Every structure is written in C-alpha cells, then in structure tokens.
Length: 150
Image (tube, rainbow, N blue to C red; front, side, top):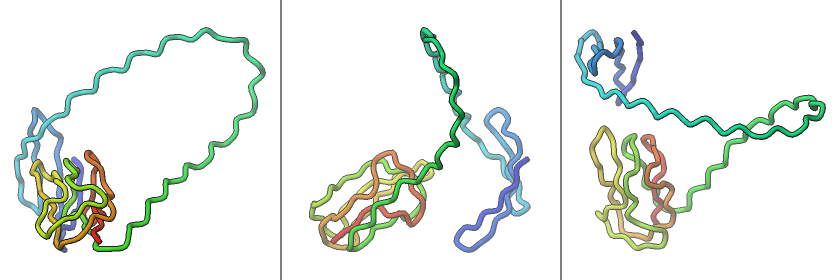
C-alpha cells in the first residue's frame, strides 16, 4: 500500500492506494474507502537487439573522465504583455493561434485535456498573440505560461 498527502485548494487529503488487481483498487481518502476502476497500460513492445558490429583492434583504454553535469536548457523569457496561464494541469491538445495573430475576447486560443475532458482556454481580452509558449502534446501544470497577448 502506498500513502500520499494531497493539498487541493487549501484542503489537505490523506490517501492510501492498495495494490491494483484486475483493473480495480481500493483508495482510502480521509478515512473513506472508494473502489476505483483503473486502466492498466499495455506493456511496451520489446526493442529489437542492435546488430553486432565488427570489432576493430582495441587500443589501451584511456582513464574514464567524470561525466559533465547536464545543464538544464534555459527557458525563454516571456514576452511583455498579458500572460494566459494554465487553469489546471493537463496536456495541450491543439494550439489554435499563432504569433502575430489578432484575437478577440472570448476566442479559443488552445484546447487543454485534463482528466479526460477537453477544456478550451479563451482570450480574456482583445489583442495580438505575442508568444505561444506551448506545443501540442506538451504537459503543463496549473499556472504554467501558455500564451502572451499584447
């Protein structure tokens, strides 16, 4: 059994998840037990083994150097303007606007999938798209930058 603690809109929830059996599991949330149906993802297909390479004569091995630490790619600074942020965590399905495009208040800018529901993200004002900070298929968290309007 795995135990988790979640904080949603300021309220704390203690959860315990039992082992998943036959697509169902018992989840205890703040002392209440719920039976939850789950989808078991299909196992990925095994990767084919690489073809053996003909070996060239080997030289004496050089001493191994310590691997260089990987630097995280810097995120582009958002353009100046009104930032449209993600209202909830999810995955970007469609981006319906492009940089330089004029939009009106209420126009759909993109579609965000969260908990198997498609949610349109609308322009809150008239303006021009200065920056599109996401791409289809990208996962976002709540309050992540999606689009900048000017």
